[in-house]
Amino acid sequence: MDATASVIIPPSLKRGDKIAIAAPARKISAEELKPALDLFGSWGLEVVLPDHLFDTCNQFAGDDDTRAAVMQQLLDAPEVKAIVCARGGYGTVRIVDRLDFSGFARNPKWIVGYSDITVLHSHIHRHLNVATLHATMPIDIPAGAATDLCPATESLRRMLWGETVQYRCGGHPLNRIGAATGQLVGGNLSILYSLCGSGSDIDTRGKILFIEDLDEYLYHIDRMMMNLKRSGHLAGLAGLLVGRMSDMHDNAVPFGRTAEQIVSDAVAEYGYPVCFGFPAGHIGTENLALAMGQQVRLEVDGGSELLFLNQSPFGHYAD
Image (cartoon, rainbow, N blue to C red):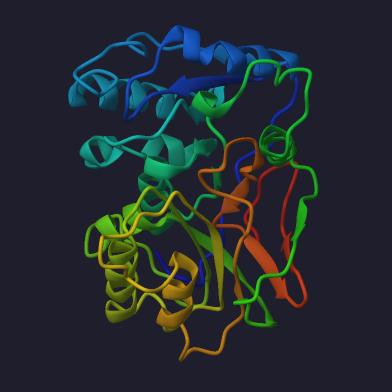
């Protein structure tokens, strides 16, 4: 996809719309979905639970053929206005090349999720340039979310409803001051690393890259950042937005750098603004929704501000 092409923003939701739950990766149970169903119902949405949603095949939500068929059905259904992925884990990469996105391209809808769902964010951005939502998933939604507002679910609702979204977070000692405008791309660092060189790899030139990760060894964070650097993914950025690096591990012989310091070292030679500690990623109820593919304004000063520039309640080709 041409880096200068206009982003397609799916139509915003309204009460009475249908959304569907998908499980393209790890298996999910009906009990685990209940808080999310209560929440979406309180928003006035009709939730579609497709056949085979609760299938199991070892750790997966059914075998590859089944998961791909369910996802294809939802991509092709014009009455479904958003597809909310139930959880991450692993498995989306096993089915992405089986999917036909032509119907989705004719009738764009929001794809919602994070972690392993980075596969869909990246694939759709590369081939279709349709905005998607890096946001909380049903597995993370706690009981009582329908009545108790939390940043993760409220930011998801605001994004889906097409409301103006602007975030500001506290400063970080590794922040690099500056301002940039560009399409927001990225997601989970481990997934982005695994997609390098594949048909789902993203073009980062002139864009604002977002990364986050969970449960990784520090030396592997360094390995992944070196891969992104050597493959040219870091040199031409407009800016870098670093979410939470949660539950990192070290070896008996310490690596000697935190995950944030490793990232900072990898981009030290470049001049674009860098924001650390943005509240998105594997952080439960604090995981703020991000519209991947949309134009954003990143300003890094004492704190950091992220403003979505072309949010629309109707869905459009943005300038």
